[in-house]
Length: 183
Ligand code: SF4
Ligand code: SF4
Image 1 (cartoon, rainbow, N blue to C red):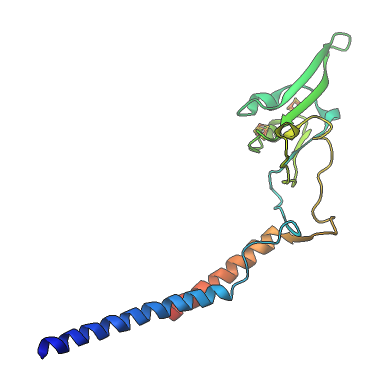
Image 2: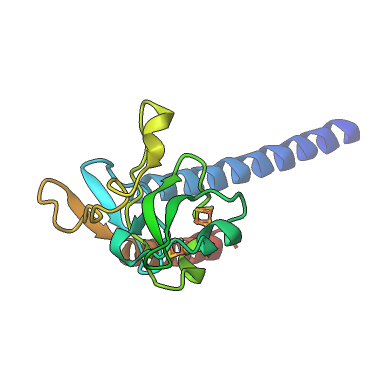
């Protein structure tokens, strides 16, 4: 008789414990159901990159003196600088310049060390192509101005700072509420 009562008590305790876990799981699930998605509806919405974002490199042909500093500081000697020495003016003449953005790691070394500031990192990040050879930008391709997300009226641009700070604050307050509830 005593063992039966004991068994029944154990069983009730386990059932209560199980119900508690189910309840906790349900609270967490319902909390997630109320949250806004952490993603944006790309390509209808796009994040505006932060000010120091390291995107596609813009190159100014006229400013380049073909010194090849960018090649020396590049971890993989990526920029291809083609030049010819002009004896009459005792200067190098730049013939072509290219960077393969399929290989570039966007470290920004070349931009940092270029003595004439003819390289600049832009906010452009949509660089995928169907053919990898198209990622190799010559001076004409890398000389075009970056496409600005803000000026594109067909999409909704979202500031990455606003997006992340709003989400972080939202998540922070939600997690605090859930923790309080579960305690
Ligand atoms: S460091 Fe600047 S100036 Fe020198 S070759 Fe490279 S891009 Fe041209
Ligand atoms: S960003 Fe870095 S990896 Fe790309 S070309 Fe410049 S130095 Fe090389």
